[in-house]
Picture (cartoon, one colour):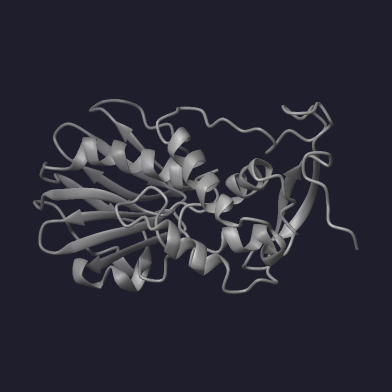
Length: 255
């Protein structure tokens, strides 16, 4: 599941494969940009912004993509078989003499003027893995609505960028609070920001993300051995998403 750490890793791989090299092939398979041809232009850099990817290209252009639930960018060597999915799921191809980057199942893909990047990512809060990280600003954003559930506030990318459903559960476990607790009732709420930063930093270089509660329903809590529980919780868009917690380490508030 792509979150801030996996998008950071994807950007690093794409940057290593594309930056500083001239594109020998470009194919954007979305109707609005199907005729755009980036061939002959150099890729300048690939930058992550929360859960967004910004591929900056010579000529003041930026290819903006978002992976959401199951999108991915794969990188292949010349002659290597593409294995990211069937051809009809390919949304973008960027190639140079040494590498080919293929974007599969990208729900968001748009070509922007670099000066207009704010239209795509300007709404985001401080990026947990970005140069703009500002813990104080992130905390102020989170506390704007004290009645809002912690889990929903963490998932709102306008508050801080990079937390997805996995880290929502993991952060709440770290601070020993259930994700549906109103954020204004959490003692020392700055712990949320600290835990979020520590968790993403710890995982940004790991090939496999370490999780303590997410996806571990019925398995023993790593702290107290109580079976982990799961339930559904709405995200800011209204979708039901799985939440995991330890009923002993994270006691629910009284009704």
